[in-house]
Length: 271
Image (cartoon, rainbow, N blue to C red; front, top):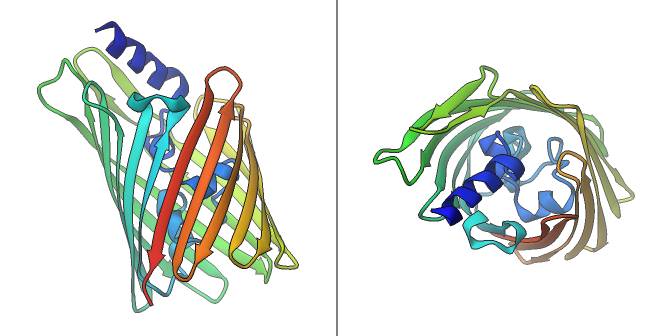
C-alpha cells in the first residue's frame, strides 16, 4: 500500500497533468527537449499530428521509456501511420504504469496537406485510468488540433492546442485535472547538417516553459542530439541510426533530483 501511494505521488509531482505529454514523447523528441511541435516525422503521432501529414509511406513502430529507472514509471507505446490519397491517418496506443496504477490511451489522428506549405490535423484520444481502489476504469476523451507551415525550404513553424475544453478524470479518492496546453515552435535546418528546434509551451495554471534541442547529422545514417526542457528541468542527449528503412533512436534524459530516464524507439517505413 505504501509503495502504491508513493508511486501515485510521483505521478502527480513529476508526471504531467496532460496525458499526451506523460507518455507520448518518443526517444528522438525526448533527446531534443520535446521541442517537437514543428518537426515532421512518423513519430509526430506522439506530438503534433500535423507532423505526419507529409509522410508518403506506411510506417509502424514501437517505443519504450523507463522514467527514473523505475519499472512502475515505464511507458510502452506502438503506432501506425497510414497514408491514403490526400489524407494521412495515425493510430497509436500507449500504456503507462504497472498493475497498481495504469493509464491507457488509444489515439486516432487525421492529417491533411491543405496547400504546398500548410498542413493541419486533428487527433482524438480515448483515455482510461485504473487505480487499485477502483473495480472499473475511469475514462474520458481528449482532442488536440495541430498545424504546421513551411516558411522557407529550411524553416518550419508549428502550433498545437491540446484539450481546448479542460477535462478531468475522477476516481473514488483522486481527481486528475487535464488542463488546456498551447504549444508554439519553430525549427531550422542549416546546410543539411544541423537542425535547431525551439518551442514555447503554456499549460493552463502554470508558467510559460521553453524547450530547445539540436540534432547534428553526422552523416546520412547517424544523428546526435541534445535538448533541454525547462518545464521539468530535464537535460537530454541521444543518438539515432537509420539502416535502410529502419530508424532507431536511443535517449538518456537527466533530472537533477530523480536521475536518469532511458528511452528507445524503433520504426519501419514500408517501401
